[in-house]
Length: 334
Image 1: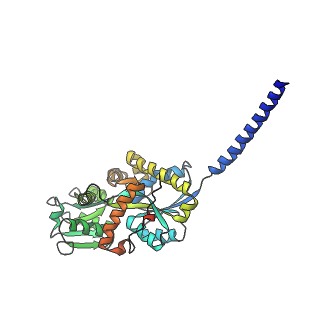
Image 2 (image 1 turned 45 degrees about the horizontal axis):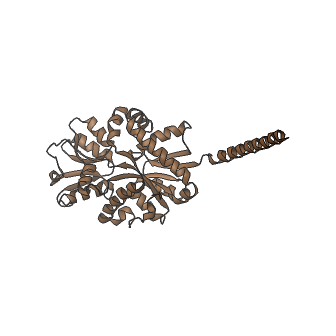
Image 3 (image 1 turned 30 degrees about the vertical axis):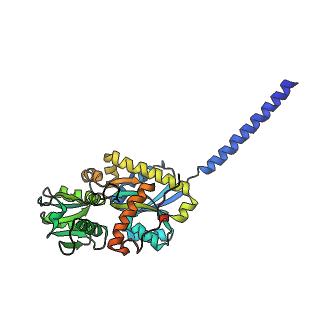
């Protein structure tokens, strides 16, 4: 009798266990349902670290359903973020701050994707330090853009006034500066990667004479800010609704950036396929110099906040008129 009862109890227990497993399976299936994440990026160095993830997503191997859009100017991404047509965007760091102000704190920065990509290029080997730029003409893109602010800061930090000690000639595009250097190698140009590598590849007389990233860090010191070229932001509405999907993106973005740096050969193929860099030989040389990175949390906040403070001191409008509040930085509590 006892054995029969035990067999019945065991059978009932097994039935409940099987039912529990089925219910758990249904629940986990729902939890594992992928979220559609619309990601916008710029056609340039700040997007290079994202390319392996794009490739992974195209093969159906990514953790979420990513829809990628690539634009040629930040002005195209801002309205898309404001309208909710994008969930995540890779932007120049000062533009991310402008977007934060325009949306009344409606976006949060989740990582730094690119550090300094600016280099001084010339065929004039007599320029070995910032002080050697005194009395010289420097060609660069866009007055009131990141290269302009960085140059002003570095010259000022070395006791020079950009407006009186140098002559700054502004061009509308980096290709114009590169073309000018090709015609006159003794000229001095401030260029971002991958234009630096392309210009030097086309003219053996040209070389990098100053690394602006290194010059920035000399002025800032060990615990100072970094020269932050690109960051990744998310709309707060999307972050609140799909924080797990955002965390998944962050993890995959980190792995993607690491892959770009460790497998440059594959990265060069992806850069050419996406038309960010024209030719593989140039991409192979340029990618290691593009400062592709992934920095998040407290380290991201320290590096970025200090950089924005430098821009704010030069021109408040360069970052949207005010420094972002602490809620601009995604630093989860541990």
